[in-house]
Amino acid sequence: MNLIVIALLVLGITGLLAAVLLYLVAQKFKVEEDPRIDEVQAVLPGANCGGCGFAGCRNMAEACCKATSLEGLNCPVGGAEVMAQVSQILGMEAVAATPKVAVLRCNGTCEARPKTSRYDGVHSCTIKNSLYVGETNCPFGCLGDGDCVAACQFDAIHINPETGLPEIDEDKCTSCGKCVATCPRHLLELRNKGPKSRRMVVACSNKDKGAIARKACKNACIGCGKCEKICPFDAVHVTDNVAYIDYEKCRLCRKCESECPTGAIHAVNFPPRKPVQEATAPASNQPNVTKVEEPKKEEAQA
Image 1 (cartoon, rainbow, N blue to C red):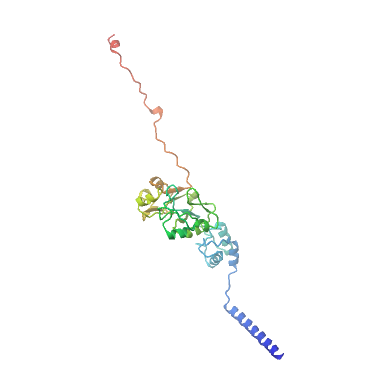
Image 2: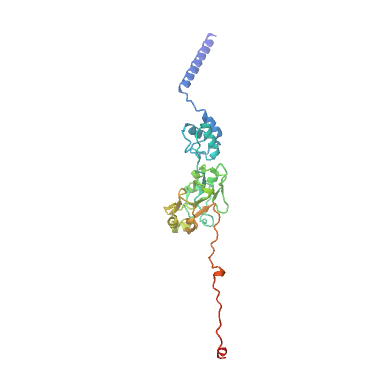
């Protein structure tokens, strides 16, 4: 009986000493967490999409609380409304972020880029891209298996069955960048929405020389440089045989669109151009000429 009591006492004392030791260690090395982190996290949407540049909403909240200014910190899903709440909690001024949207730099539709082979395997752009050039002769074009669709958490991308290309719903796109990171051929990018959601985009990423690119796709940029020469704002440059428009410099004049011989430059959300009519002189300004017949010889002799 005494052995049992002694064993219980030893175990009890050992447990008590261990508890005290753990408590002292916890107090010694405890990290004080800013209570505002929980408040900021509560107003964030909780999508954990990574569009803010952090691993999740918790990391975003920690970064906001540690920062001395909210400049460069933005939640693309929540937008200005959420950042206004964050600024109110932290007592900082919210910095307005330029709205962005995902755009596709490919216009290789089924009609312009016919299939030259048939792929029979797992429907994944990443896997298909690692195996071969794809079902067409364009090694830079969209593979059309929808990895971007699967990556989007906001149902903002869908594959058009007629063109075989992904289409982005601007109203649903939060510019989180998941589709951009997922595309194995880097055909998607985030660009400024632009005034009235209007922007100029070169819908091609083919770096082959003009003749080869044109043979693979009728809508391909051939790197002719006409757009670069006509742009008055130095916003268009041809690099590696393909043109690119700098949205920071572009003033939406649409001169490059008219100059492109293959239609690779797209003017998004612009009203249709008015048809050019040939100028004709008004009827009132046209001279009224009356032909006078010469008198006959018999009438003249009389």
